[in-house]
Image 1 (spheres, rainbow, N blue to C red):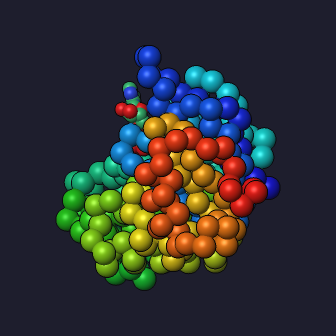
Image 2 (image 1 turned 30 degrees about the vertical axis):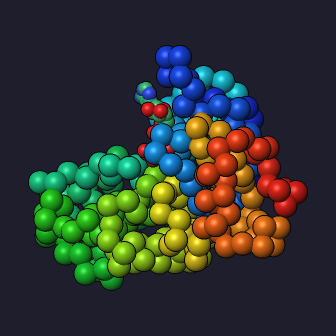
Image 3 (image 1 turned 30 degrees about the horizontal axis):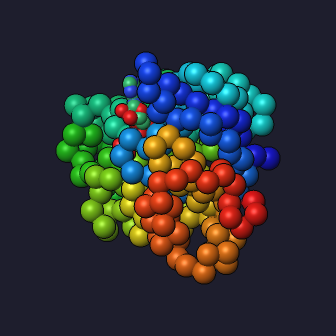
Length: 246
Ligand code: ATP
């Protein structure tokens, strides 16, 4: 099943298009790197996919047929927004309690086990956690909902290299262990090279390239970072399909 399908999807804020003519098919089972510079439209695309932003134009389907933003669709999506909404003054235990009350599906055992493995004490105040621990807490809350699709908007930006590597390893483990599809937006290309199986490059609100990493690598004869950089520099929209014929 495709996890996200868009057809000529667009979002306009007043006169300016944040995303335009976006036609994409993202098959399930991938860890998708959504790459683009500041203001490219990454957050706009992801928030439309999770139903927080309404499209101005085009069509969007998430996880088959559920309308984006419907309770049924949201039940199967874990979303970690750029500024993960964590309450600084609450102990981690109470933060889990709040999240549990906000979600129809919730696996408390899984959340507590994960935090234990990560050595994040339930009694510690959220505001006293490191950036890496906060990111892991937000990921734990998203995973406790047992999603089919995990959407992560710029989860790496504020993390140091070790925390980034740990965070990505957690995402990969969750994807492999639970068969979750992941869409992760980032400016940080280097780390994604090792983990992404599908690449989408967005600039100026338009898709420059999209496709399975393996096919892009063989078609371009270059590494993922180089392929992404070429498209980021080119700035001229090509089709939203890969040059590998996807
Ligand atoms: P970043 O990497 O900086 O998070 P991004 O790729 O996620 O950037 P978006 O946040 O989707 O980009 O923004 C795309 C464009 O839409 C930008 O020009 C931004 O200023 C504009 N935009 C986003 N949200 C709004 C809003 N609520 N009102 C008006 N303009 C907006």
